[in-house]
Image (cartoon, rainbow, N blue to C red; front, side, top):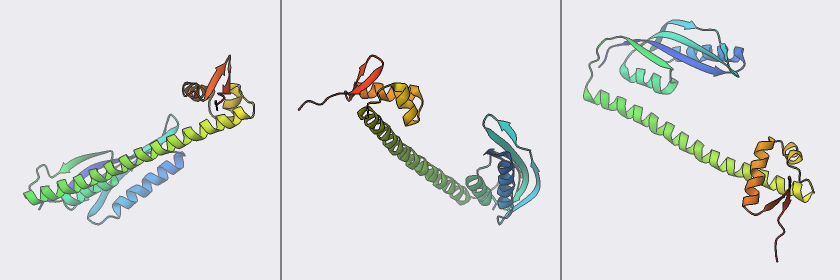
Length: 190
């Protein structure tokens, strides 16, 4: 069985507003400290700094963790930005400990992979639905005799360049035709 592990662990958070970022980071570190077999020795919090549209902050904590299994659990469940193992300088463990550690790690990776695939599929469905709604909106507006791309964009609520892409796609699909700078429905035969 491995000895206790002393490590410097960095957690980073990004969001807005500034106060929320700083408070959430403190709560997160408090949650880490409440875990069984984890003891926080020191903690240092940086004030949140503005980075483009978000605020970013980080905390460095020195922790003592009772064993490698719990240390791995900490890493996979709390996902720190970085870790630096200070002690011990060498680890001794049995092959079944390594096997358990790797299986726990792989289980977490599979979990993350499943979530990523599910999110990807959901995004595809949502994008298809949004595209259909925008095309239907365009058709309704054209039936109402609004054919100017700028007016269409304003009524739909999306930028002109995006609206134009939809209009051009619908021309390629032969649902619309372009007449000078305006669009109109293709009349169906039969």
